Length: 130
Image (tube, rainbow, N blue to C red; front, side, top):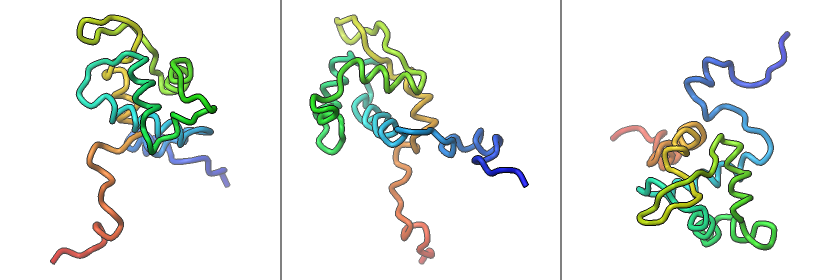
């Protein structure tokens, strides 16, 4: 009898959210969720702007992380797990280190539900139509 280690590969290709992520997954998914909120429609943001916005979110852990809040190095380390790295970006007239929205799309698509999904409750989808 083979050991059960997780969903078979064809299922993972169709439903990447089933892929096991390992230790620290909850914080990583929280970070991706918060970044999707912060980016809104911006093509790129400066690292400092992202860190400030994350630390200012009341219902997220970033402001109290390690007693001082999340910093640029911590952000880079956490995003590296998703294959996202800081790079030179242009925001209006400013050019410097930051993150591009396009570089986050793959992680958002793999680990987060689509925007607007998940708002249904169990009661909503179990309620028979009238």
